[in-house]
Length: 253
Image 1 (tube, one colour):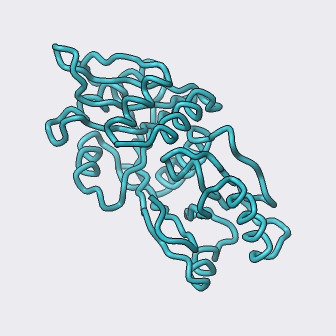
Image 2: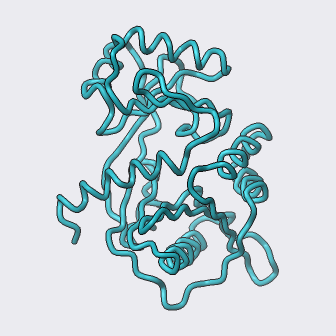
């Protein structure tokens, strides 16, 4: 069992690695806040990450961010984590009437062990992978193009894969990002849910990541997605922390 100190350290590593892995080309720093302006589907690529306390009063900082998001034609949203700054940001946004939505749990695996009998998976280029997972999620053409752009230009190497049946039909797809001894799993999606394909794919991804030097892992899953959480628990992942979004507008889709 992972002790509290190790879990806390791994949680922070996962947060920082996740920021790198999800970085779109359209991002900038405003007084210590990292703003991301991708038109893609992933909210983490089109939100504010409040990384540091700057010099501006909160209202002024939010106004400057609002200008950037209005110019990009995107809704204003802040991703709130245990490390957001200022430390009382969540309470202050709530007091302004900003709604909370899309809570997600980050789960971590402290000791990654390879599967002795992994299934074969097929690697895809960024554009093909984005189109594949986008089709499963009924994403728009704009969102698919933005996804492909983001993963093709990410600061850490993208690796996307599909699991097919013997006839070549898609069963599941997923992405991994290996940074040193840490791997992140992303975009795990199944063409036939609750048949074990997602778990088989994840085991194959973790085994491949282990061969590339990864010894710990992380992933993000909806806080209300109990089916996926049970899957990841079977792989050895445990809860590390939760984040959510706040916006002054209607809940983002």
